[in-house]
Image 1 (spheres, helix red, strand yellow):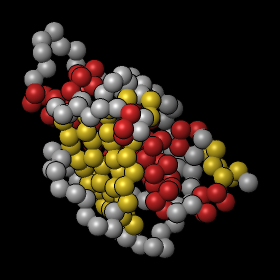
Image 2 (tube, one colour):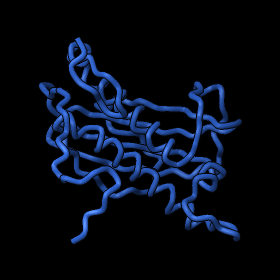
Image 3 (spheres, helix red, strand yellow):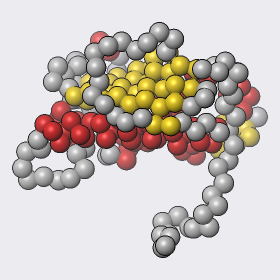
Image 4 (cartoon, helix red, strand yellow):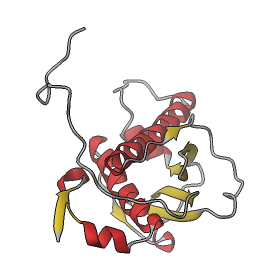
Length: 192
């Protein structure tokens, strides 16, 4: 029985959501939010297995954490420099510095987690975002479930992973339409 329209205009079968684990639901929301961010950057990727693409040894990495009473999330990016340059927000006639690319990969981590935060709001889950940092080589702590997207636009792979720890085993994901009480039409500016 379809009872709601979910994020990105997709129809949601509430009975199906209730039969999925919290981690499965989070992984689906993550994949949808990643596609939304990539689309906004004008990037198109195909999903590949880890073995089908090569990881660029010079790729820049970043991670960001987010928490609520019920969830602990971590997003990690491993982004090849050519992809960072392709989606860099400012057209530059000069070379983009390594410092600018390092800042940009951290901003991308922030955007991906921000999209995840937005995707969770209709389910009454408000997460608090941390600050993006350069990813360390340490493994994620025990108890986290990993979901990694290996995306390719040519012969290099862009990796983005969601690491999830459900802190409350009774957590529920019930979609509720988010009311727009701003009184503004889409695209209308509010003046102060």
